[in-house]
Image (cartoon, rainbow, N blue to C red; front, top):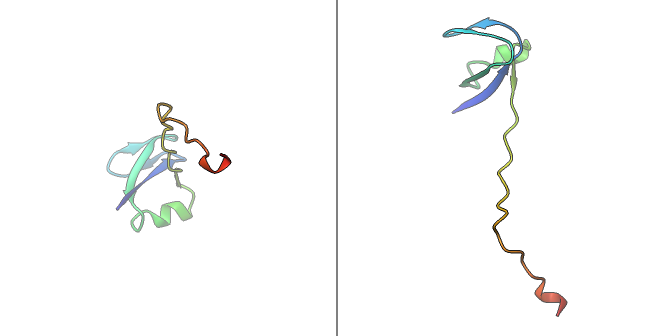
Length: 62
């Protein structure tokens, strides 16, 4: 399973990655790069809130 990482400094993988770019790779293959600070795991983006959902009424308050 691949995960997304942020590149912290210029590095050559399959191509030249500059600082700030995103890299997607297998966690077991890039573990040494994460340990050395070359890659930083990005946080998962929160699911967007659906503003169209109706509000649930509290039926216990009746």
